[in-house]
Structures are given as structure tokens and as C-alpha cells.
Image (cartoon, rainbow, N blue to C red):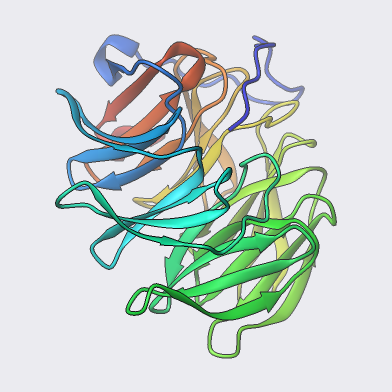
Length: 309
């Protein structure tokens, strides 16, 4: 989630004005010194990347801190651990979520030159892009070692796991690749729009930010084809995306803090918060976490089932 300070107040042409929601009733702000960015939900708390560390925060305050050189990209919690990349050390790091101690440092390499990337988990493994020329490493959490590498398009560093596959986006090639975890091979390639970025797999589709077009593409995993697009704004630089509760949740930089999308009608059903620069978003059934690194804060948005009805 890069910093993006040119915050615009106009919606894209053709976007319908949506009812505003009182911020005082929805947003609970938690000040976080530093550069709070990528998020991973851990029960009633959330792990956050920051400068030189990852931290665990609740709505009441900071719970833990783990020093790192340069944590980067989205993190994943699975197999009793937080998995986070270090872009300076070019490693995948395993942190015990109970003790908040780093237990393993795995020398995988890192495929993203700027830290915009994903670490994801699924099919009993941890997945991370480890070569800018086009490779994803599969790590076995039992041995904490790389057990396979998947050849991909160059800079296929945006990953998601869900809907029966591992998915990888290359902004350079403007493609979404489907990877079969049973063979560690690319089995389908889907062309996508301008400057594709972060993605999510859930609610029956794979959702790809088309940042240059201001749209979110919905890819049908049954056909490996784009089934439609959601017009959100002029651009989607930069932000984040997640799914859950029958909705798609899109962290934006312009126009609002985040938008709620109906996955069936492919329409924006709510726009919440003021533009706050770039940051991340993660859904939970109890609430939605967002970060705003330019404002040095996290926000908690309660009752997500009521948002975007």
C-alpha cells in the first residue's frame, strides 16, 4: 500500500451517490505511531507491519512487538504462526502468535522490488513470490523449508489462495494466473486490466484491483474468465481488498476510506470514511480493520453485516 497523497473528492463519472453513514457510529480510531500498513487478523486483535517491526494491536492498545529489518507485504496467519516477508533480508519469517517470538527465518528470496506483495497460506503450505523473473516458492510449515517452486509470469507477486487454487497477478504482464496446488503448475492465464494489483479469492469469484482503470474485475473460477467489472472510481491507487460476510471489501485511496461491493450485482453498495491515503483492510464477522499509514492509525468499523445492505 504505497503512500498516495493526492486525495480527490469527486466520484468517477457514472458512479451513483450513496447514503452517507455517520462516522461517529462506525469508526473507532486507534492511534499507531510510525507507518501502520499491512494487516493480519488474530482473533480480536490484528497484526500490523510497521517500520522495523511487526506489532499486534487491539482496540485497547498495543499487545506485542517483534523487531524485523523491513517487514513488507500482506501477512498470513496459519499453522500457529504469523508469516511475514522481510524485503531487505529477502526472507520469509515465522512468528509464534502465542509468544510473539520469531522462531524461523527462511531464506526464500523476495520477488517484489518495492514490497507490494502477498504472503498467503493454503493447501498445507505457505506461498510467497521469491523471484522477480517469475517464481513462487512453496514452504512446508512442518519443515520450514522450500519444497517446490512454481514458474510464473515476471513480477507475479500479488497472491491469493481460495476458490480451489492459488492465484497470482502480474502487473507487468497484466495477467492473473491460476496455479493448481496439487501439481504446482499454472493451469490457466486470464488477461486483466490496467495496473492490476492486490486480489482476493472468495464469495464465488476472484477479485482483482485494476488500479489504472478504477475497476475491480470479477473472475469466475469455473471458467477462468472475467464475468464482469465493478466501476469504483477514476483509479484504485493503491489500497487493499478482502472478502467475507457475503461482500467484497475494498480499501481505496481516493473518494472514501473503503467501499463495499455486492458480489452478485457487481455494484458498490456503500462508501465509508474520508479519503485517508493508502492503507490496508481486513474483514472479520465482528468488524472491519483498516489502516492509514499517513495518518498513523488503525480504524475499527463495527457491525459489517449492516454496511452496504
